[in-house]
Image (tube, rainbow, N blue to C red; front, side, top):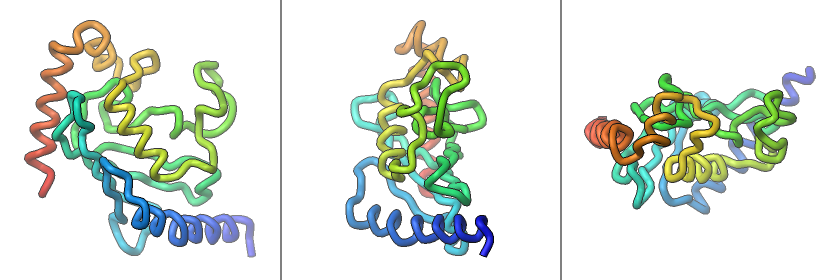
Length: 176
């Protein structure tokens, strides 16, 4: 067997034997997750419910979580498919938080290695981090500079208005 086949088998085993059962046994409040296609264990759809007492409250934000073949050695990628206005979400939906960054040293020196991806992270820890990100944006290292500027300068003005529009749209699209 090739090294690739061994890594692929380990990834499939990890995703199917530990991740799914754990999510079902100990559900985390604020999100749901499942396969996009039953034949592809690497691509998941998650729905994050906007956290209470935040501007995102009441929203239903769909995202894709795409696992690499060498998971859990490398992090999955997360991309919102529901429009969302947030400093740590790029305009194309890509989520930019430390826990989803490749393991090791940060070439820019912003993040410590222990803040980045570690193989001990789970879907639950990722989702908890994303829910926390919604409640407390990090405008020091933005993926969306315009949203970060609005968040810093006037969080209850233009930023709040754009988030409210995204929340309304997400509610309308939630059951499509």
